Image (cartoon, rainbow over all chains, first blue to last red; front, side, top):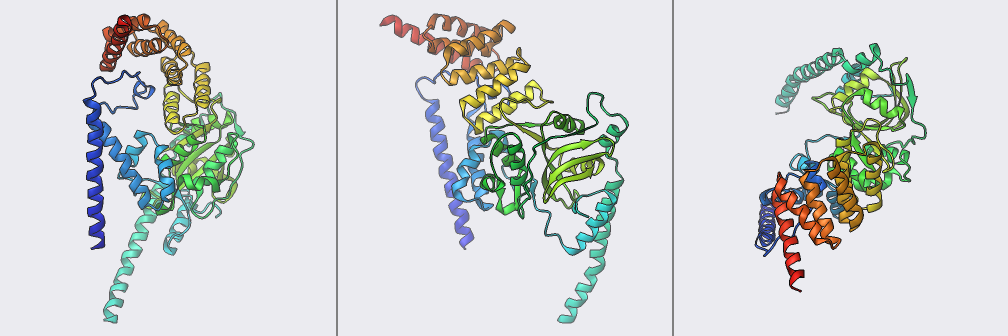
Length: 134
Length: 332
């Protein structure tokens, strides 16, 4: 029940964000005259391929989603803004919906006993390097 | 009831053993697999490379429980001249839910500390070249197997051809000596991922102009300090003075920072190299307009529109804006 509430709330939030973003972008579209802009370095380096407004909305939503994912992964709310803002659009797209599967360099502790034996054998064979001290 | 459970448990035992055996077999197959780059280096050492090298003044931070990410990042940041501890980086890169750190966040955090993050080509010889040049390399390894990954960040800081070993600061061990072949296997399982983290006045030894420019574009997202970015562009331009991408990037930085005469100078330099380069005409036109030279601006905006290309919509808007400025000023 609680979970259902959470999902509905999430969907509502998502819908509202989408609505807001669409308004924002379409307001820009119907502005009397769009201001002139330089060709950015990101565009020249072909890192910024957000050519259509649809792409821009997608990028915006992906960033929202990554914020939520970091929160779900236990990152304190006070750190989320700084961490997400430090990422490029490409990096955000790389993380989006993959945060559970991407490599996370961490500990080499906490392996089941049976596996320890296997890894010691493999370490000795030079295939792995789980126990550098051995 | 208890008996049935016991029976099921007992039945599971052979399956578990089988699984272990399969894993072991997979691992042994991996071990037998060659480490092609190390083998190549052993038989054919690149001539310009020293036979042994070590970066001095690489600090060692023993990692806390799950935090090889902050420890490895602090190692390269301090080596690059910054004063910082792993504890101060935990808030920027540690992901509690994964009990580890992601590559993306390691890179983003280094950029926030005013460092250029350059992703190296996936070759051992490139790592060795960087170490010879005094740049320790932050690497991701998979110390386990593909089917049972153990992701780990470490810093490679030295090598010795004769012993065939690399020198790492890794986890709880300072000066960990590991055979290149073993390192190569664990590194290959993590996609040969390695980065240098350098201050803005220093270029990675193996950098190419195109990739360096990408690094600077990323740096600008995480760090808006004009001084740092300017120094990074100047460092690149010292090595590649005629690189259009870097000249444009530096020009754009100056334009955004409202240093119009200098931006104008940069865009003109690009046009001397390639007279029909539309983006330079467009951005020059905008700098000239800001510098109150509307007629010269109009001239370049027209050229941009004429040459056209991928950003032709932008060029049309620039020309519109300049035209309306001129007619507004004319009627005043």
